[in-house]
Image (tube, rainbow, N blue to C red):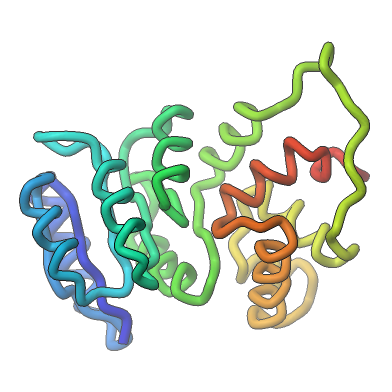
Length: 215
């Protein structure tokens, strides 16, 4: 059973997430918060596996809550669900400890699957965010440098390139005709070799080291 805590100021979206999560037998909502003050107390209490966190809250930036949760040292997966596609906000959330980043225009079932995905070790991220992230860190041609030798295997490199294009773990498995568990293992190996904890961090690290430019 995946226990989920929700931080969302929009009552309609909060109720939708709450109802949708509780409608699935493999997950349940343990608490909800509509602002920074309520969320901070909920984080102190703990008792959940996944924190769904909005960024634009009436009394502050949700990135501070992400940082608060990350500093607890618990095995919590933090999934941002927000309207903000701004590159700086994306990077702030990732640096604070978010392992996934979805926009609110995603289908609610995609959000539910993202909760399962993140608990399996994945890092769900909206395709538009993946593209923006890669654009943010694209090297300046005037400062081009030879790519470093990749520590990844050929198959891990194939998986990483699919992830950079916004494909989910399940879609990667279908494209490469392997099981979802096999993709999950490749993703964990990629994270270990690149010394990162999320898909966004893996794309960032691989890009600055020149791995994604490799053909």
